[in-house]
Length: 221
Image 1 (cartoon, rainbow, N blue to C red):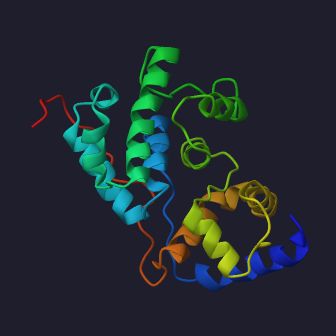
Image 2 (cartoon, rainbow, N blue to C red):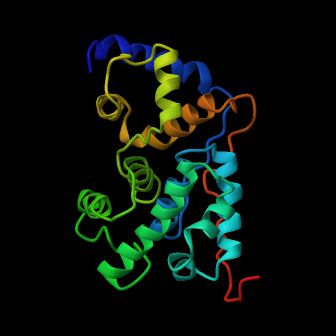
């Protein structure tokens, strides 16, 4: 990215200005697939709303296999998004789960990093239905990988605050941030940036993990 040194100084100043008083809880996912699904859901909405609909999703369906075979319209209703974007996210959720089941014969990503984190990321990127944001989110949150997930709102915020080159592509911005932000500070930076984007900096940072209590076996209502 052009003028990386100049923008790096601005990013450092930005982090210092918003970090004070903010409590960032670490990401905590028992199952990497939870993080990948939450990434898909949260890409086009706020984290607060994503946590709500993610909780509703888990409460509504018996398990991920139940979600996998569900009609897209039913998923979209749970997501509370009846726009074309909501339809696409709903379709991607079922496509992802189907692709995962077809490839591994199980709806889980546990152990996918046995050959290393980078290979795990590559394997996730090859699954149908995933997005760049969702994969990066899962890579960061579930595997502790070095990534800075950026959705459109976060990118627009960075540009509007003159924190990155306005002409840089999303890939160039991500690459710049990954080189500038240490891996150990990746999650903290992601949460702070997302809070700044969504106007939540005056409040205590939201819990890093969504309420993901697994639904017990039960019939759908």
